Image 1 (cartoon, helix red, strand yellow):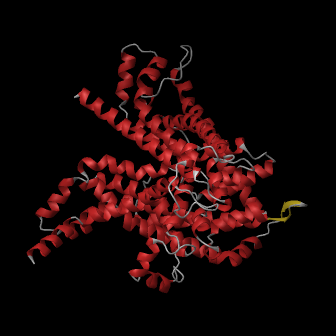
Image 2 (cartoon, rainbow over the protein chains, first blue to last red; image 1 turned 90 degrees about the vertical axis):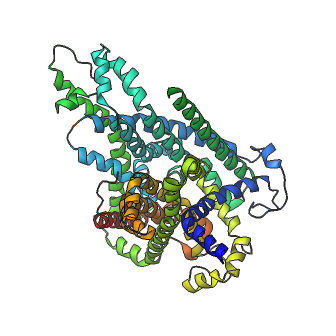
Image 3 (cartoon, rainbow over the protein chains, first blue to last red; image 1 turned 180 degrees about the vertical axis):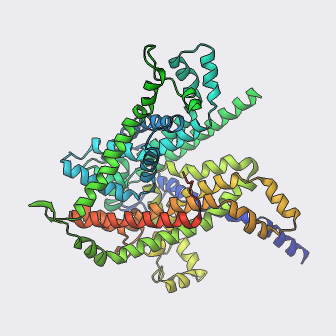
Length: 270
Length: 308
């Protein structure tokens, strides 16, 4: 009896931990399934039920027609979209934090609205614009769309960093006879860099994984998410799971490496 | 004003002949110009085009003309009100589930994780790096007919409850509203957890101690101290979940059936397959207006103006 009541007391104290871990399991379960099924050898066209263990897909990741092409296209679009959105977004963020100007409220809402708009609305309206202008749907229309919806996220990330920056550091640099360009390159930019990097990373992830806006504006161009979408109709090759697993592992490794470097730096500076 | 000009980044290389402030004043506009122009042309202008398309009549062959045909809106609402209703219901259910599931995890990361905090945060974000379509397809395997999950739900008689609610049909989960809500909840859960965590993490731990010192039980502390202080996170989390969920058509398409179509599915088919642009534009406009109205009302009610 005492054991039982002790157990219930323990349960009550740790209920939130257990509930939290259940949620974490719910979040990670699909990734586990994706990884396990990358070693599957499915019968038929769909990779939804377990048959037998095989390394075939891992040995030949590009063995499916058009998949690696769509992957490289997605990477290219994500690269250029990140570059464009980060450049434009960083400039806006600096203007918003550092200057007072007319129409600030309008600028703020113009940046907030794309984030508060369902993707399908932006996708559909952008397609109406392109159709009205007679634009050829493809790489360029997708790139334009991606820069558009990544921009607001970059602004938010960079703004947060620049706002917490001490303006006296720049004044100090100028007091020490640093020219404007020198101050910007050697003081302002390095301090703002983590915010810019966070914004760029977010933009890359958003662009690489975007489906809805791309689906509307890509015409016959096929990005990786669109390839996956198409394969859900035609038949899912195991190689999709290989790519999904590899991306997950690379991301986790990069983040862990980054954390270790950060910890070592902290230790050194102590 | 003077402190602002002092702190100004020095892109403007002042020529000595000019008064220094005049050219500096233009700097913010030059910084804003390219990005704002991009948003005006590719975000705001398309909305204007869409509004005009929604009141046009005509056909693909003969071209469309603006005839101020507002009846398109009434017809669209009359034909597709079930899909609108479903979008609101599914997105609402997913938002509530996200809050119920996400809060304990955010709380765990903020207060109970100790040195595991960063690792758990990484695990919350890491799934993002696998394409969400691949992860959504994985739910087809997890919820497969006769699979372990469906079997367990059946044995616990939970399927009887969801059958009664109309969320499932017989002993299937796939291709039912439950599967769609489950997919929506899964896909947007991190957007709930992260803002919740940010606002929980800011709470001063001494407030909890103070509440305890004043003889508040843990549940009272949560109700009167922790939860009210986490309201900004709750508000932005629910918005970040509800808005994309209401417009989503991927989950309804991959995990649902023709009986679970949401408004996003209709917009997609009208636009990309049936090519009925006025109806699609009208539907998209109604969705946008409905969401903006709900968001404004909700923010007023919840009383947090500073969300971004």
